[in-house]
Image (tube, rainbow, N blue to C red; front, top):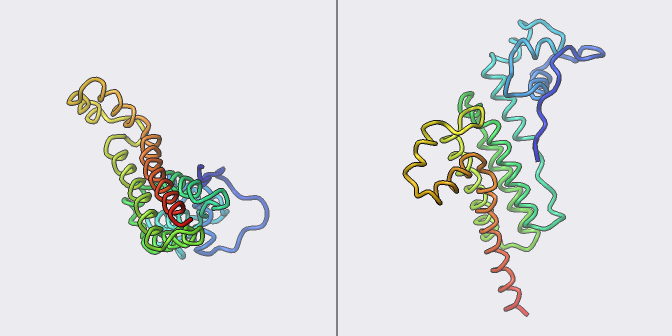
Length: 218
């Protein structure tokens, strides 16, 4: 599941939108946060670059606000298909967001604390509505999020900006036995399936635990 945040750079048809910070940030998100520029946003809005500085302090301020908006406006997946599919979809959404924007979050200093807390609580409430105790829901959501975040952190440590494995990471593979080396290299080149498998192991355990509880309750 990929969040679409890029569009065509150029003047928007129709009347000029009323210039505001919200309109500027919205346009930045539409154009794509990864390759953002003041010039591109101004051109898309059909205004002079200088007019944007009445609403944003500069590129860092604009990029930070755009990243925060992308995270805040990304909806939770539906829980209709069950709690497991819900958590798997959320893990993939979170992976995609962090993979695409981790560099910008670090470089631009986006503050995602309030957004992360609100999303965490919404996921927990969805699980309690599905029958989980509050304690189990908090532990499960925290575990899944930790696995995703750890996976992204590891990926950023051994992949370059273009997604290729760095020479240093490849050199480190020689310390492994040949059979294990092949597995580790596969993870380095495409880490999401590895993270998804770890999440699946956790969810398998939760399903087994839930079935045992249901059996004892009968």
